[in-house]
Image (tube, rainbow over all chains, first blue to last red; front, side, top):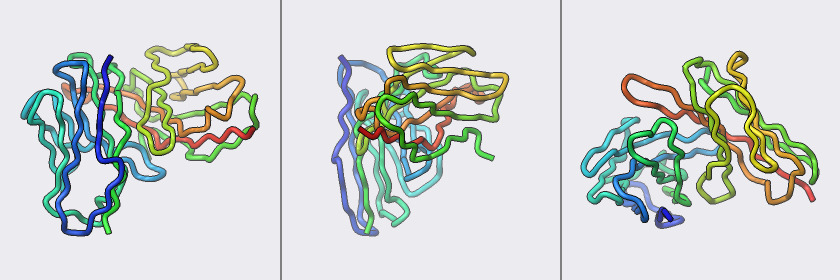
Length: 115
Length: 113
């Protein structure tokens, strides 16, 4: 069976510090990978998605970047965090080729607080 | 106007009641409709997935899509305290050569024992 791991679960970082959140998927190959941010009372905002190693699409220009160094590894980074980067970050995957109706499978998220 | 509207709640009902959760949308191009359940401090998990108008049933859950009214619903029968969670609707449509998933804000549901 497929599993998705996301860590850390919670993170408190000062403004201006770097960020690295990691997500790995097991039990499948060549998945689509996604980073979402969820703000309280708002829907999920797609930040980045990737259809393959080294292929990253950015949906929202901002202080964050993403990388996919391996097939089942997706990393969200920032060089200098802003207060507005606080939020709940979710990694997700689905199957290639039928992304329009292939269910998304989410990790348990990282609660980031920038102080 | 948001493409997908969903009342954030909270919606509080007694155990055993029938729950109705709803989303409205404005884009008639939406083709696929999903309901996700999210427990506190967890990621969302897929509950129901529908394509056409009509009803789809899975145990105590029924998803309903009315494309003519641009309205989708999730019904929960015999609600349990374990159903307390945030329920998010999501729908997808083709944008250029890709498909885009649009999310509602989520409705927080509380089932009182």
